Image 1 (tube, one colour):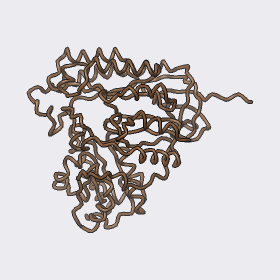
Image 2 (cartoon, rainbow, N blue to C red; image 1 turned 90 degrees about the vertical axis):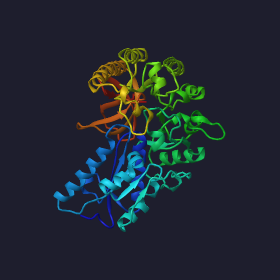
Image 3 (tube, one colour; image 1 turned 180 degrees about the horizontal axis):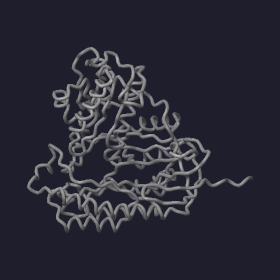
Image 4 (cartoon, helix red, strand yellow; image 1 turned 180 degrees about the vertical axis):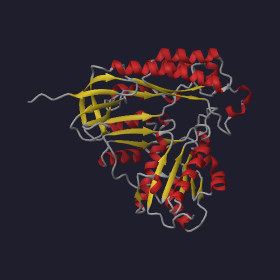
Length: 444
């Protein structure tokens, strides 16, 4: 069945990191600006955008599986097949293969998605629509103004990566590190606040590498955003240990709006493995950064990323990772089994690959330690009173869900509306969330 000539409805499905979530939101805004209507159900849309992530193994095969499912569902419903656009990092890395195997209508990379409306028009006219260029000119100037957002919003400030970790495809799919202009970011932040945002999370592959010709640094940008009336919370992710400047560390002590939360991936606890990963930091240098951060903001919650089973990792080296976890006491973490990515240096170390059953066992042990520490951090919050930004309704009647300053999900019964900031006493701490009761203000 042929795709609809002029799609009227669309659905964007994003996978992977918060950067992809931001990109998905911007693509949706592009489609809406063309007069198209968003649908919550992918199976009912004329145009489906699969905004893909290439970090994990078999990402490409998942794309093909999703494409097949969407077409099969359309055939079973006896309706025209949707127009399918594959965007994001898989599109960048595997664009021509996706066109050849899946015969999709549109393929667009993460640096070219501002051209999506034009590509959709080409596809509707029966013309090939593939764009995986990485133009020198920023795509952001071509994106529509932000008009309405929720109480929390993402703001991409930096893209790309120059670190070339041996396991990572990001430098090849997102390109070199590029920082957006200072004035452009301040203007977009103001527009987000005007559109309803009370919390902004600054995004980048290495967000703390953001800088400009004046040497402002991410800490200078945070100080500027601190002066925006109506903006109550600032966060940033994902950081690289080598870009944790002293000014940014001090900002955690100086800027009240900067939330007490830092996501700083380490990936492993062994210096030999870190060197093999080309991480450019050591175990000791990483721990010293955390000591400085905690000195600046004693109540800060720390988060990180870990990879187990990197080629050649010994049992003793994995134990070094566990001992680092014990030393830090993370509030949250993400952990993964090593996944060889085509074209990366680590993928060529096939003779050093760790058996799957060994990686499984190591991951289970690591996650058990991380879950232990996350539960301990959450339970240590019991009895505290903190501000909670209400983000959405909970599953129970009268229940709302918000985030604490430490990025914990907090469930509470309240009459507060989405976007309200309420004072909450934490009454329960669990593996992945908290419960609390709203503090009633005394009558004047």
